[in-house]
Length: 359
Image (cartoon, rainbow, N blue to C red; front, side, top):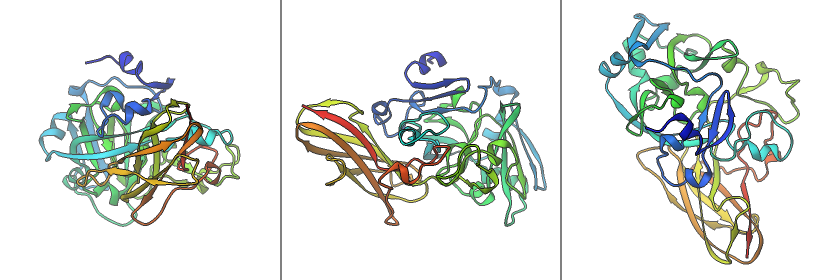
């Protein structure tokens, strides 16, 4: 197996401590299921070193039978399932918002996203084994082994999403044991939600009557109007980001590429948190005219992305390639990043534009 340093060398690294990196877009688009070594990495704190045989997972709170399980217990006492799902950082494509005005956070291009076959057990099965006391308004809080500014990483999701059949406690990715940077030995996978809600290196699961009060949940990943600044942002008034919106990106050709006049193949992805992508339009002239792309989807994976491909006849000159997607509700993306810009640079979903030179 390759070393962490070798894997880092093939990614675009935005930070080493915490470690955050994304693949080049052409590498991302090379396979429908993203290899673990090409999958983006988002860490908020340290990269913990965990010995699998010593790891324990506690389940407590509003349950009748609190549990403490080893990794062997997790893998032996519950049915294994495989869910093909896309995971995406809420800051994916933040670079487009940064081009409008300064925003905080890593300058993700379009590579803070990936799709994998996640193998694990259903979180709902674990909660029912612990005697979950189902009720309106309950939340499932996660605590992890990594620490962020002196606190264990912690987030929560509504109980209904925790009990949904697609929500997993995963121990394998694309049929292989999780890599350390992807959550070894155990992580949550919450399809359709922002990646922040799929914590890695799980330590504790607590059922409670309120969202987690951990700083990551209470203060971060909040969506604010464009007039709110980092200095005036009040987390209590921000919208908590859970389900991810419709988005699309051009992966090939790359920004600034020099192309030959004539037929050019354009490829990329489209994704929507909990709705199907039904159409992708691509423009070779900045959005004045559009051609519908062909779609590649996995009908058995409703929480996975859509790959798209189109051939455009590009005349010589400076061109701007553009993509926009449509979902099953007839919704599409905003044309410009100015419309949804916010001080944190979250949910950058405007038409993706790629300038190229055609000789």
